[in-house]
Length: 405
Ligand code: DGI
Ligand code: FE
Ligand code: FE
Image (cartoon, rainbow, N blue to C red; front, top):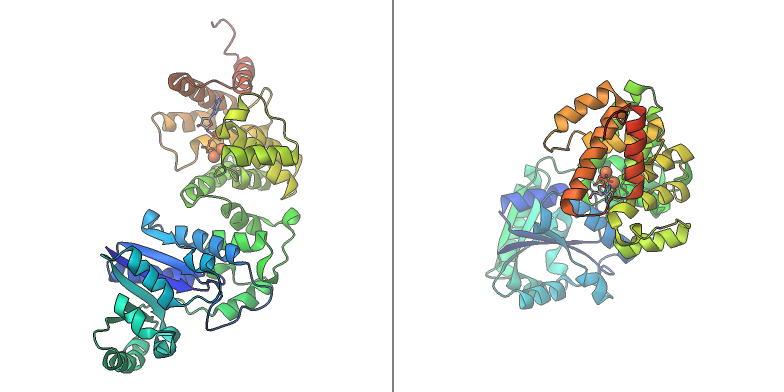
């Protein structure tokens, strides 16, 4: 396999890293890409107020997911868990020993490439890996890189050096970016989930009040809670919730906030859900105790209330978005069904359901709910009593139970 290795402090990982990683991945036709956040970097000291190693690791994971390369890209914690100064020669030697049959390419930008001979044990590095150095302009690559490439080839016979120009790679200085973040700027230079993570954890002296986030801030913050693959669903739910709120005369801002946060605990395990219920005093019944699917709406509502200070209406909509309940409010119905019919959903009958929802909201919600009930019966899973009573109440409202079995 051809494996790219891209180390760095990732303080924070930004769109410049992602653009370079993606371009090299494609140009070198790599099979894998491993991002390796450094422990203590040998060449610089961390500025005060910096995130912890674990936070840099988590941000790098969020950024890596954004590449859309699935499990071809991995974030390795080997330098962070090794502790102390991170020497690339140690890392490469270790990786080569573990994967003797693979071909390695070490990714680096202009500055790193130009000073490569001053690194710790350059000959060891070059014995185990090729170098893929990327410049931002043709001038970088041809003028600067050519001299350095010749020098390194002479100095280290047998070295494999590949230099490439990545047009359009954004020139981002991490130092400047950190200053911008402190001033409330720079979010556009980061993957949204990374920006949200920074705001949520008050990194780089950002001081967002989590209980008073504007919609513009809430969006990236909400996305930072999600697995990358769930982002389109949540943004689709937001879009559908806006449309429904406008159509049926509900508060669009509340609908958006509820949609953005509705699945914010979806990636958690059963025990993590139960711990949150304990922490926030959420009552859990026997059926819920066994089901992350049923618990995620309860825990998301608790996070919306306790962490983000959302109003009761928004929290209730989140709380009932999976099962529904008897006598649902307009906002509750909107979120329940937006989740069901948002644009990325595709299942047999979804078009018919979408049409129904915009003809008669109650009938549409009931139709969705009956789909779910049928699905649960098919799967042999228990139907939650809240689902049953929600459907019952809607049958009542739509006059469907009169004269029917
Ligand atoms: O979180 P989403 O996947 O976007 O959608 P959702 O919140 O509607 O969750 C759907 C899951 O919840 C799905 O796997 C079915 C399950 N579910 C919905 N209603 C019930 C239920 N599970 C049980 N046991 N009983 C229900 O009444
Ligand atoms: Fe959900
Ligand atoms: Fe959902």
